[in-house]
Amino acid sequence: GQNIDQPTEMTATEGAIVQINCTYQTSGFNGLFWYQQHAGEAPTFLSYNVLDGLEEKGRFSSFLSRSKGYSYLLLKELQMKDSASYLCAVLDSNYQLIWGAGTKLIIKP
Amino acid sequence: ETGVTQTPRHLVMGMTNKKSLKCEQHLGHNAMYWYKQSAKKPLELMFVYSLEERVENNSVPSRFSPECPNSSHLFLHLHTLQPEDSALYLCASSQVPGGSGANVLTFGAGSRLTVL
Image 1: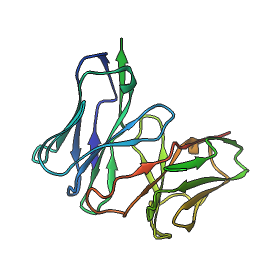
Image 2: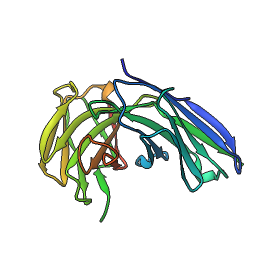
Image 3: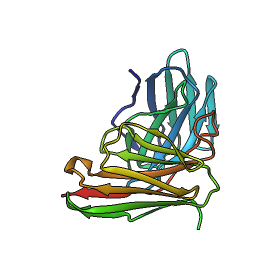
Image 4: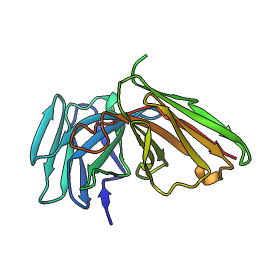
């Protein structure tokens, strides 16, 4: 079966760096997405990786290794507003999105 | 108004009620989706519409009935639901279903459904 694994919850300190991992086992691969979802709000698109390597976008970076079935989202200079759930999703060979259960990130002052 | 708008934001209904969830997008997208989000579980795709035609139904119980009258509007009609159907129902839209990075979804804030 198809599976996406990511930690259920993580805690970090304001101003620090945190890395949220995502491992996947899917039928084919056509890209990996990261979404951010604040409590009670819509998930919003953060990043898309289809080639190996690191994509940087301001304080957020996303990394992909297709051979390892692995991605991470790196958040730098953490702010209180970064407290949210982070959803990892993979587009499989049929262009179906397979979702992880999300990682709840708690930022402490 | 821009983005994806869902109404109502909160809904409480009994098991014998009939209600509907509404979704509207003003992004010019041609695909719309219903997802179910339960606590600590992955998003579950329920229905996909492309150009107003249903292209996917992931074995959803018949007590959920979708309707897509045009490319901007999507409804989810609810009838004789069960308590386990209590969840957040998210609507999303995209440019095209499937296909590369163009498949970025824009979500609404969701309708929180509680079935008593």
